[in-house]
Every structure is written in C-alpha cells, then in structure tokens.
Image 1 (tube, one colour):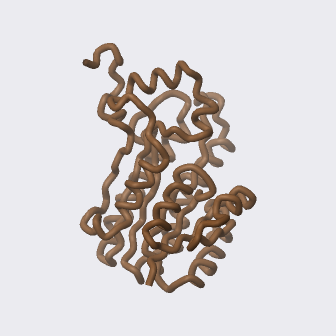
Image 2: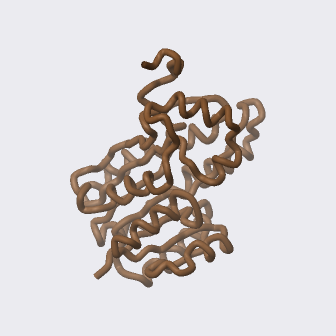
Length: 249
C-alpha cells in the first residue's frame, strides 16, 4: 500500500517540487494550498496527487483538512509544513498587522497542522519536516518578522522531536538558502544575484528540486534515526557567517 504524504504550500516552488518527488517514489500526495487556481493547475496530470484548498493559518480550515486527508488512509507517513509568506521591510515600518500576517502562516500554521495531524502521524509512525529558512539561522536586514518566524519554527521542530519521538514520530527542519525560484529571479537584481554567488561557497543558487530531495530523504526510511535536526540546504552560505567575499580564498 502506498504511503501518504501531505505537503502544504504545494502549488508552486519547493512544495510542488517536493510533491513530484514523492509521487515519483510511489507515494500518494495530498497537495494543500490556499491558491485554488494555481493548485488546480499544479496538480493537473499528476497521478496520485490530491489537491486540497485550505489555509493553514485558519483553525477551521485545518480541521477540515484533517477530515479530507483521513479519507485517503488512516495514517499519515509524512507532513511537510512548507506553506509560508515573505514580508520584508525595516523594523520601524513593520506594523503589528504585517508581523501577525507572517506569524499566522509561518509559525501558527506549522503548529496547527502538526498538532491536528499528530494522531494520523502516530498511526503511521510518520515524519514531520518543517521548512524554515537560512533567515532563521542568521539575521539580516529587513527580515524582522520573517526571520523571527523561521527561527521559532526551528525551535518548534525540536519541541516536536522531543515530545513525539516516543510515538515513533520524527521531526526535522530544513533551512533553504537562496533558491532559484521564478519569484526570486524576478525580484533579485543582477547585483543581488552576483552578491549571493560571491557569498555562497558553491557559488550558485540552489534549485527547488535540491531542497525537495532533502525533504524527501528526511521523510523516508533512510532517515529512520534522524530527528530533531536543523539542516541548512544553502550551498554553505550559513557556514561563512558574515565575512567579506574578498577574504575567501
């Protein structure tokens, strides 16, 4: 019987790439996103994919998602909490409404989804993979809400690992560095792209599939003794700290 995975924020980017990797490995995948049109387009033609329109920041939507996912099996082998919003700006310009909008999805959504699906994860001795960001590992300008939300997700992951391990549930966190998404390439100027290439030891952006490969591994039996880990998939970006590119040899 095929394993069942639930991927949030699955309509595009890392979520879509991860969903395709699960499907290629013979899993069934519930692809959850709040963008109905984009989700329908993304899931079209993907054998074994079930689109589910819901907003992870709304408790009632999460409760409905549990009912819908349960129709496809009693147990859930993998929950990938990938849905997130990015809102960058100076601290002084970050209103409480903007702060809450980021926290609602990036942090509250991870908590709500993980808590709601814990019974199904227990049934399958499944895995949780939360998607944070390099911005949760290293502070930078304009990311007071985003970076703080992702740092909180990293700690939440370790809380989950500590408490849910006795039920056979593993919880890990992936922190992507700069990824070559359509959105990033549209908003990153040539100067920003060049600066990232200089600052990253591998001298390039990552791909959505490369991040997806790590997520898929952490959900697989090959990672059966891995839990409570914070793993950066960033080409070495975090390891270089904030040193000047000119000092690298």
